[in-house]
Length: 69
Image 1 (cartoon, helix red, strand yellow):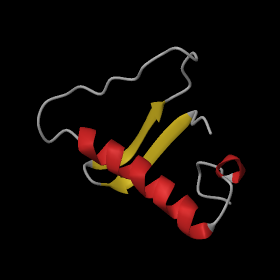
Image 2 (cartoon, helix red, strand yellow; image 1 turned 45 degrees about the vertical axis):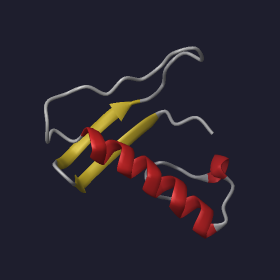
Image 3 (cartoon, helix red, strand yellow; image 1 turned 180 degrees about the vertical axis):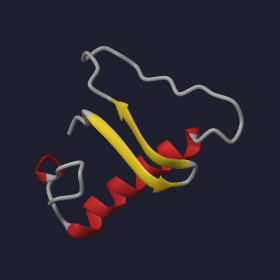
Image 4 (cartoon, helix red, strand yellow; image 1 turned 60 degrees about the vertical axis):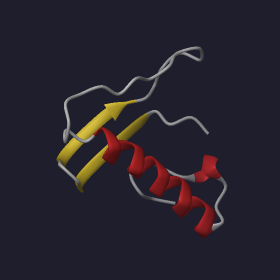
């Protein structure tokens, strides 16, 4: 599964934040920033998405990032 965009609403320090993940195949995404700016919350959101997919038993390519399954 390839994520194209991650949108965080009222999650950690983010009220309404989107990050584009639509990168070329060979690209690498690097998260940088000062302390307490939300880098770990972005990774936590991705881990929650993965865990939720496993619990729901859905195939990863069937999930819309806006929350609809």
